[in-house]
Amino acid sequence: MLENVKGVLGVYQVKGKSLVKLWGDDLRIDKEKLVSYLLENMEIGYSQAPKLKMGSFLGYAMILDDTGIVFLNNYLIITDPKKVNWDHVIPYMMKEVTRA
Amino acid sequence: MKGKEILGELNINQSGKVIGHAGDIENPEEIGEIISYNLKKGMEEAKDLGFSSIHGFAMIGSERSLAFMKGKALILDTKQTSWQDIFLGYVFSKLILILGIAVTILALGIMATGVFTNIFTWFSLNSRLYFSIAALIAGISLLFMSKSELSYRL
Image (cartoon, rainbow over all chains, first blue to last red; front, side):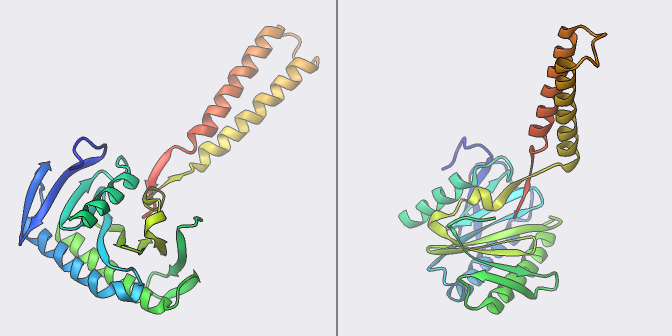
């Protein structure tokens, strides 16, 4: 999934409470904390979505320092935010969401 | 920023208060609260994970999405959004832009005076032409260079 796409550094999947690497660099951050935050943010998003009239909440993206993060349908995509084509990555992952 | 995918816009000050909104937004205060809560939470999470700050975020919904960047929030039509434009933007380097304009004007001036008047006749016509063309190329290159710095809009 998204292999060899410019600016995409790695793809990971959250299974239960652990993070499984599909391909890419090993993450140098506390994975347990990361997973609990990712899932907690999804819960927050679900609860906020009706007020925003979003339809169903699919996930989120953010830029932390120089790291781009996309979290959609339990997949975590780590990117170089200036090199990646966001118009490719986000719609691609949304299609994965509707297919799954 | 304008575009058909942007359904509404919200301006928020540093303490999280909504200071203006436009477009299709019925409940600006509620959206403002959501944004400042998420931003605070995101900042805490970022610090806890070893990052120094969160630039911004986007919440993606099947119909509408919300993006927040530097004091501004956008309500977006998910299917029509250009995420690239929302997340990144080019920053003009003002100094290079001004320098480029100055060099271009100077080059055109030298070209005009050198070719059509007798002021610089102690140089040969060729050297006057070559110099002004070189200066013109330098000026135009500077103009293009001024738009080269990519930065986060989010």
